[in-house]
Length: 476
Length: 95
Image (cartoon, rainbow over all chains, first blue to last red; front, side, top):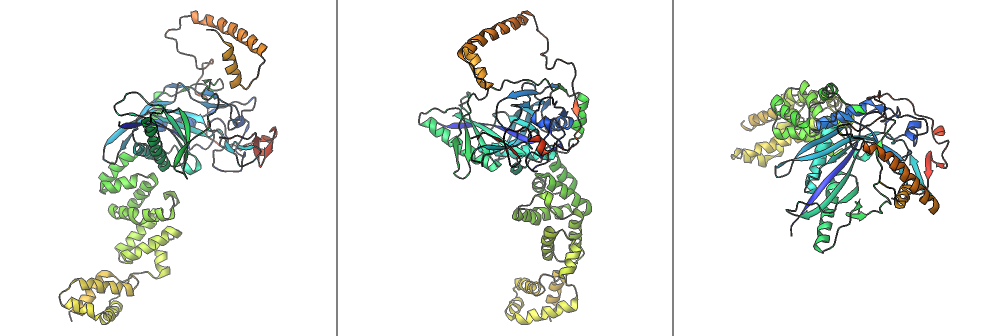
């Protein structure tokens, strides 16, 4: 029998507000344990949570960017459970009236098929604290993260393959980054993914028993865990066994999923409206105001880059996949007119160095005007193209101006005819075989000889001039 | 609607409360009569009436996104039963 998988994803993203969702404590990552905490965070008697307006704005912004309907009326609810990461014994979240619903994300699979993945809802809630278990005789709790605002984005069970799940996450992350509502840093926990997966015979309309997967620390881990889990479930069914609904944990080292001990009395959260917080009403005017603040989304930017700068569609899609990279490109183009040259440098040298150093685009020290200066140095003949790559590496490492690097290291292009002629004569003398080849009609030999001049000048010789002088000398 | 003893046991577990058998018996009767009393509300026709989210008719009470220094950690941890390395210490939790 042929089986297909049914996959749904729950993504939690921390919002980029300065303060927590219900109090004025900072949301800054890190900090000594329990130093970003106040009585509201701890839910001490007599405290009153007050909703951060920016949280609503950012969540609505994300909802609009993800094609959602924005609820005119929504409210906050208490989700009750005992766990020490929640000092109040309840989490303030949204139950039946989320802020956003019925959105979608469009993905394009490797065979070029476009598919819409539905979003059930986006709601706002507070994050929980951090538990540390290293201690032998107890667990330690740090409440710095308690109350950091989150949006939870719940997808429809619309994905059928691990690849689709991966593409969905990549696209979702890109949209959230573009809308500037979350920095989506998985390593700092500002983006977290849980997934539900079941399998069923192809053609069946009913869902199989779903398994929840946890401990997914990267998008690649999501894909790998799903691949493993789908195979495991199919094998169980083929052996005539039944699948038990449970939560399983991805073990990255072993590359397998493992059953987690289930919490007793799980999932009886007794939600009820939080009496400390009043309803949220998003008027059409407010919604439109937020919509106006929404920056251009990746697709539009890509189309605009092609139309406005005349770069190929491929270049545009590579550059716009990351907003910081797209911003860098545009600032460079403001200072240097050949967009294609800029895109070549970004996709070539810059992306190569980013990959090699593991740096984020935001950490790159090169300023757009410095990039433009470098390209101008090539254009006006001060340096050669190959030297420019060396200069670029130095700029990437130090943030220095290209002119400064060229001066310091003596990298100026050698365009002095007398000097070049001297070197050319020496090269001709040292390479009689190639000279002979050339004279016997092998035009390619000239390339080798130019190469020798470049080598002798450490890449600084003006290649056109070197070529011209060689031809003159050889025809003598 | 009537409240059974099993429901009282379930709810007391969720609330981390322990009752004797006599108490369970007593509470199921008491809760049952409370619920039956409130059940009277079901006699009202509420078709077309929006569910109440909050009893006070106000909405959109917000705070501006401005950082105010947090409380001293010493004070935060003052009432903790146990503490260690600037953290609250709780009985060992195993995931």
